Length: 425
Ligand code: SPQ
Image (cartoon, rainbow, N blue to C red; front, side):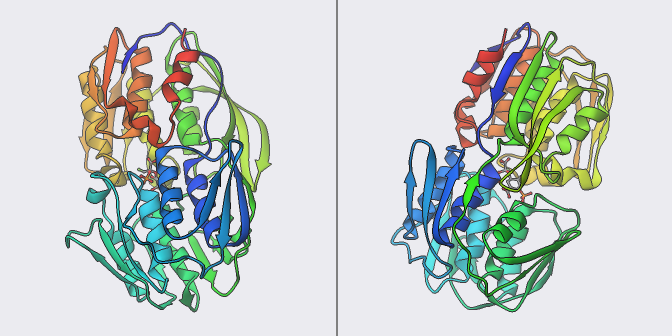
């Protein structure tokens, strides 16, 4: 993919449905009684992997043009798959489904692509094993393929060492099948879609601060889910609208759940011109339209409890920082190293290739902004967020940029380049 510097980004865009909520709508719909209808479902490769896994577990899922229809079979309605379950590139699929499979009365094998086979799964194997689960990493390296022998489980009080919605969700989902209450406490609150949605499907789930407690025994019932636009996908248009001169972009229907919307705080801290319009509730989640325009940005510090609320936006925040005046420090974000790529390394490599002054650290990076950036050859390392972040950087950099394996954007935003091109002047 070759992307040239542009004169401005102008117009309106409606980004696709939220990836985290789309995954969960299929998973929770599958183990609920009755039908779950999902509109604005993200038809990206990751969420299609979730659909494919649940079909192999005996769930009928219709993909109609206007919605996805999941014919749920209740908590105990899944059946043993005759094939290996393939989560593709999706960490969310792998970790959340592990929690569901741990408590079934059958065994199965769960795997994914080369990237998934390198991502750490001990973070779910360990708490699930404490609940009585029998999960083994086939190669003994703490990664997929995972051999999961479903077993009776008991609830635990789990204090997680990481703020991870995937760990929290895996344990809570296993808790649906456990004897007694399951509690998860995290060091900082990660995205809370599982808590909001499971309660909406009928589970007895209560949250207080950084702790979520699930008491089993309540059946789940199918729901209608209207998925809001994904703020992680909106982030690329917000960043482009801010760093490319002569720009004004309106991103419509974006989910702004506070556990996801940390980027809005960072934009404000950097002096970005951002207006939040038409705030409303959509299926229990706050939604708004976001208007940005070209701004003179200044460096900031991104750290502590804000990190989980913008973890997937850090690559594009680093791009914004490279175009800002002054220094931006990103810390407390060691989780970046265990995403689809090591995002501290891949962001540093790409930004340096474009002429930016970036120093990687153990848990983040330091970006001295303000140097003029130039086009370069940038490797996405098959990481959708890296490809999209450097497509944005390319619009504001001198000359032209080539992105290797750029089509990995199909993981979360299949029409990304078309939307970007439509707005580019
Ligand atoms: O699903 P996957 O591959 O882990 O996707 C990513 C992404 O960038 O799209 C992370 F690489 O998003 C995660 C996110 O980082 C999605 C997610 C969720 O839906 O629960 C939670 C976050 O991960 P974690 O490990 O912090 O729980």
